[in-house]
Amino acid sequence: MTIRLLLALLGAAQATNGLAMLAAPVGWYAAMPGVAMTGPLNSHFVRDIGLIFLASGAALMLGARKGRDAAVLAAAGAAWPAMHGLFHVYEWIAHGFPAVPATAVTEAVGVVLVAAFGGALAWFRMKGEAKY
Image (cartoon, rainbow, N blue to C red):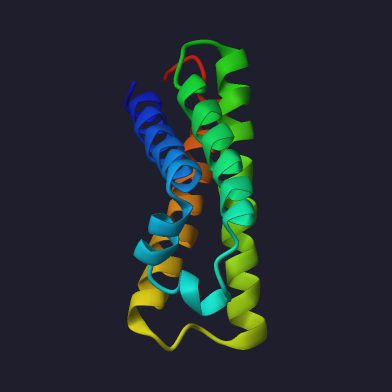
């Protein structure tokens, strides 16, 4: 039950982030530490990524339901954050860890740690489907 609750909460957070990106890309861009350092605002691109976060969040939330099919949805929902997190780790290896503390925290906690957490939850959900 705990794994399913955490999946639902993480999914809600991912979906909320996606909705914020869709509804207010300018505000989202300004509020996220370090995002402005990646280049000028492209509202279309922010909304594209917002759709991915929304879909990922929805799959994570659906993955919180009972049943093997729901466990598969949890894994599907965790795929985007996992790939996103791995890409950030690759960037650290290739270009160094962010020098700006706010950016470092945003990437390390908000991207990589959240991705690892979602991946672990999905793995536990798949592994012990009958228990959770």
